[in-house]
Structures are given as C-alpha cells and as structure tokens.
Length: 273
Image 1 (cartoon, one colour):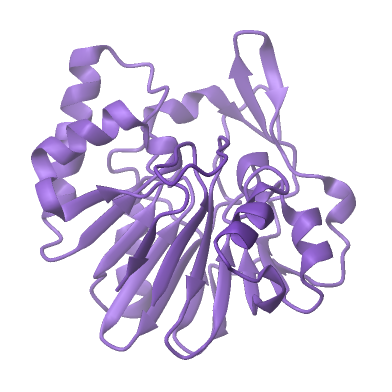
Image 2 (cartoon, rainbow, N blue to C red):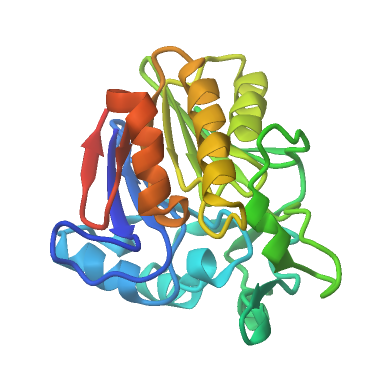
C-alpha cells in the first residue's frame, strides 16, 4: 500500500499548500482510493505534478462536512468520470466555526448533494470493497479534542456532535490501516471503534488529530498531549502518521514522547507500508 499526501498545510517537497487534507491511497491489488479532497482544485494539480492520475481513482471518501476536506468535490467529479464518492448523509448540513469575526460557514456546496455518483452513508458501518470499510457513530469521549468547542452545526448555537464524521479502514495483506480526517471525535475513540468493527489490531494510523486551537493554557495543552501520547503508545506496534489539523508545535510534543512511533506527513510525502 502506497499513501501520498496531495494536500496538507505544509510541504517539504516545494508543492503549493493550503489548510486542508487529501490523501491518495494505491493498494497492492491495483485499486486507487482518494481520501478527502482539500478546499478546491489543489489536490488535482498536485496529483498531476506527482504523476498521479485522478481519473484512475476507483473510489473517493469525504471524511466529514468541512470545506477543507470536501471542497474539492466539484473538481473531483469533473476530473474523474466513474468513481463513486462516499460521504455521510449529515455532511451537507450547515457547519460553522467561531472565529474572531464571528461565526463563519465552513460547510460544503449543497448544490452537489444530489449528484448521482454520491453514496450517502447513513449506517455506522459501510463496506465499500474487499477489506475496505467506512464507519461512523463514534460516541466515546476519551481525550475528546477541546478545540471542538469552536465548531457548530447545524444549529448555530449548539456545538457540532460530528455525526457527519466517518473514518476508513483498509485491511490488506497483514496490515490494518486507519484513515481519519480530523479525528474530531477523538483519535483514541476512533481507534477503539475501528478495532471493534474489524476485530483486528490497527497497525497504522493516518490522521489529523485536531490539536490546534485547543483553547487550553500551555501547561494544560502539554498535559493533554502527554496523556494522549501515552495512550497512543499503549497500542503497541502501531505506527502513526499525522498531518493537517494536528499542528506542528503539538506534533513536536507528541514526537517528544513517541519518538519513532509517529511521523508528520506533509504535502508530497509518500509512505509505503
């Protein structure tokens, strides 16, 4: 399995960047999957630069209903004429972020909701191929990201419950790999649900962990990340690749405790497992 970052907030490869996420996943069996699409067309132009053909993608997933993960949907539908796009049925509901200027809409283009190539997932588990599973309905609250308190929707005065968030598990050969967009429901909670859903031990995790804008004091944030790192290490042998909404200073705190168990995946980076 070969995973390539097409969109991230950072790049060591000199590629253009944006606040967002997009991963191309090439399976050993020849299938190609796109996980998230960034804000717009950047994922496609970076893919072309890297020699990745978006038209050959066999299936696409949008992890949740925020513009920095699903804003590229229109571009994807134009560039690829055949792949189905799996998105949670709640993803097209309104979503907002509280910023210095007030509540800002951060949702998707609802005009695309009726496109015939969209599969609206409304079950907690959706099988999309041999060894390929989507799941949602994560309800535990272990080390729930505190930055979520700035996010609202569909009601502007009620915090988002992230029922629109879904994660991807791919089992190939002897590897069980978890992909999570922002892990708004908490990466530990998502991992627990993933292992229950598959009855397998997760070997690799690719995920933003939404540690930015925590609103915590420096000491409290350090304590939160320290606790998170220890619990992640309890999954012995699991290798983590984080990105996007984790934040670089927060990643460095994780790295300090986790050493080689975690790495940061920037735009243009490739991991082969």
